[in-house]
Image 1 (spheres, rainbow, N blue to C red):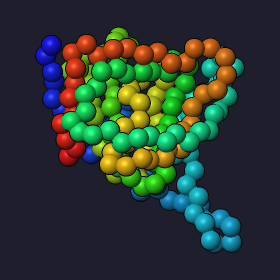
Image 2: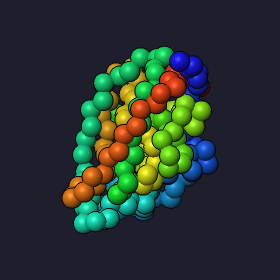
Image 3: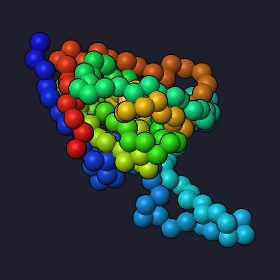
Image 4: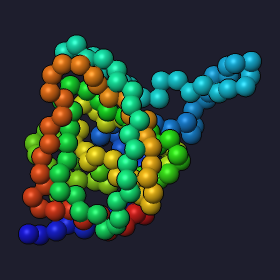
Length: 167
């Protein structure tokens, strides 16, 4: 089996655009609320969960760290909704994605490193890996879809991709 080696790139809105949106407050103008004691950043991602009677589902995921090098063996996608991950502890994490509707191969896969103050909102049908925390257990706020219908497809990556480091 041939292995493809890849380094994760820094997460940016431009680089991530084919897969979804980067959720961050940098460069956004807040609305000042609560008698001037709070900043509110609105509309940070287009949440898409209403297909076939879906509803917003707000969860906290607790992810155990994964050591590098890390071998990507499977990806998943959600045909009925977007899915958003946002780190709650300010810790960097890896994002692994692939474009296209067919089952991806290692050469189709891209990896990004969140600064810890950035989250992501995967577009509907975007192939992605489950959460990849680095260094220590990390909590994530997740906006997902609840409701009827199958909303998770998985595929094996037969030609393994190994993430060797983060940039």
